[in-house]
Image (cartoon, rainbow, N blue to C red; front, side, top):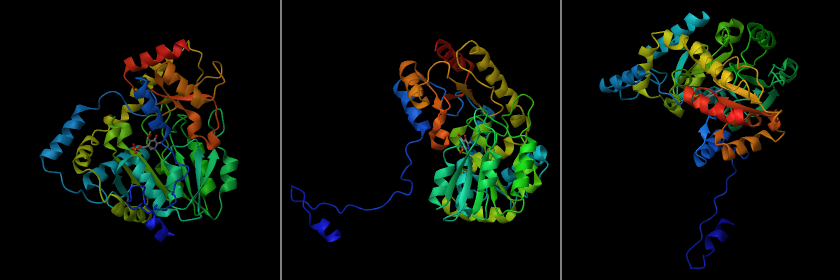
Length: 399
Ligand SMILES: Cc1ncc(COP(=O)(O)O)c(C=O)c1O
């Protein structure tokens, strides 16, 4: 057949190339809603409160630390697992907040954002045919990473309308072939924060199983109204089987740096580092040096909850007379707004109409959901300057 193709001629007499045959490893995967909405926001010159990143500047002190590190010649490959000074600070931070000691020499890896840490953890442990339970709605990188490894993603939908955990479904799907559970706390997009009781319940459920826990905690420092972030690392029965992933971009207002890390017990971390080594080997050296210095001051992360709660409250005050309904986000920098009382249009259509006609770009929540279940909710990112929030509120109040 290949030969036949080779012998085919174009009309102008030149040889036609053999069609290369392959099958996509991610056939259903399309451009993510974040790219789609960001593109539409640009096209319609819309106010962009869709994607999760700040529109204000990060701390210039941290920028200066990176510049300084470059000037000091920290410009060659960093160690595979990350600079020891940074890993030590990460370990000290977890010790301070969660009273858990990770050995920084063997249980911490600095990664290219939390996304790479998640990918490493999935690729290191999930084998073809093994099940991975994913609480949905979920960040969109988990499922394709499981699929690429030949694993079977099993969606466990959270219960509407308050995104409660479906314990019965979790229990039903836990079996000898369940390799991993992926959780995200505080949760994007709902903003929900796990309680200690829920963490303990999960520990009880996983006891006596061979199931690993992958905990995405990128919004760890954004919890509101006096809540505490209960990290998986703070619950010893969970920490012993868990890989915890975190992001510097989310907490230090520099998502474009794509810096993150993961922590896990030594034996698990060994496997993760094998993949990291052949995947990127190491991440940006001067930035690691700067972060190691910056983390020495806990106020840089301890003040974040107050900072973002003030933004959430300001935004919700601005839209208090609108026709949208909401439960204030418990954490993250996202607020869900329900629009049942305005229209029963599907959320993707409504979001597209809003960006086209009202020049505001939001995220329709169904894209995160199992079977695209539509709860008529839009996600707004409030990691924005006050003037951006005011402009967003002006549009929202008119709808
Ligand atoms: C739940 C969740 N996990 C991970 C990430 C990615 O983090 P990073 O930018 O550090 O890769 C995001 C970013 O939006 C997120 O919302």
